[in-house]
Length: 376
Image (cartoon, rainbow, N blue to C red):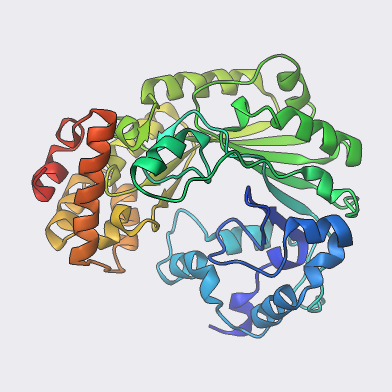
């Protein structure tokens, strides 16, 4: 790659705050920085001129592919004709705010905030943990994993930060529509910048829709991007996202579509070894409904990544998706990287068995072929 290819606008204009109060360049970044939200509380935007962030910006200007950005590099090495990498997409979105030819290694201004409000959620997704869903504390204890209690970063730590340039906010959860922090955060944005100047993006699991004063305030934003999570239009979704119901999600999608005017709704589908065999059917169904969609593939944990499946199971996934060329191309692009490992496959068997016992369900009722391959 040449120097142009590694430039990413986010370290110059973006503040990504996760529920653990850590500050990262973006939600995909695989690693920690030397900045905590407390630093922003004290220093304002100058906190982003730390030695770590400065070196990151220098590397991206000098053509260095940082390993922490692996998800975008992987997408670009295996390009999907239907979806740009996040780096490419956001470089285009914020081209008016930042220009590679004029930037220095110092932070510019806060144009974009990505705020993890809390980990309050009502679902128990198999690719998730209690860091992002308070509902999973009991299950994490059952699996002997780290247990994260309620996490609620305080957005008031932006008080000393200049937000006059803020134009885009992405809200992360938990589940935003049940979060007691969502509406107060909107009030804060209104006080600091004015909702009419902000485009809001949010992700919801589709289990409910906003009502009352929250609905009224959402109508005031300049524009809304609402991503509704649906991993399959079959019961494979309900198996992967315990507590979810694919039929109810589609019903709520229609309700959200009818409620808002200045909005773009889309389905976001997260594909794992538990759902990838249904991708062709899912995309065909969504095309018939004329619902826009984006597709992402689980890469962590490894045991849910289809790249780590056996050659035989990968071939079956390909065969299962022959009915939709878009789905098959997505699958084939992702499977250009082969990470099969016997231990990872055994980890999948362990987790499936343990969680099926925990939830009193059977994989064979949702994906009999995978159950047969695993011998469960």
